[in-house]
Image (spheres, helix red, strand yellow):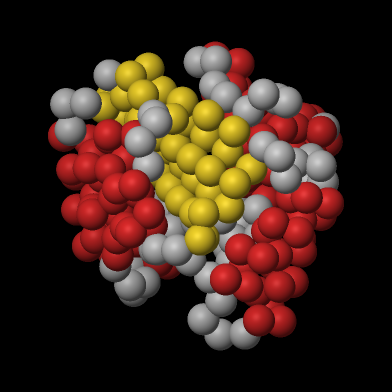
Length: 214
């Protein structure tokens, strides 16, 4: 049987247009940077297939205040800033100084420097100092710290807002069973699903958790 492989991202780009193509060059730059930066570089941008989520949340909530844990070169932060519009504010946390510098340069070049603030340092150090609640929080960082993040994430997500947790696939995909920190992913997800402050849906296939703050 001749089975044609489906290129999901190409198909989404054809169907959704700008929702998927917006800042796609920064997505590509992020991959190029990781290859050039070498082993240990943790710039792994979210899939462009996730891009339509941010304007959906921005309209549905509505949302103007976003927090991202794990900036990389700023691809998702740029999408959030676009989704929230001219009055939006995005705080994005990045521990690597080189990545923070590159992210600020890219965001400024795209005219988004006034909407996005790159917070430099480790998330577990910076999160306790943040005070104002956010409409949307996106976590795409070191799996080993996910369980420790949760109390701060719950505090910082406003009632009616959303916490989006990326890349829970080590728990669900056969090919990822040997990846590190699988048990931390499980611990985090069990805590999140059982947390009475959230109502959580796990997106099959993408393996993101979408959590409504009650």
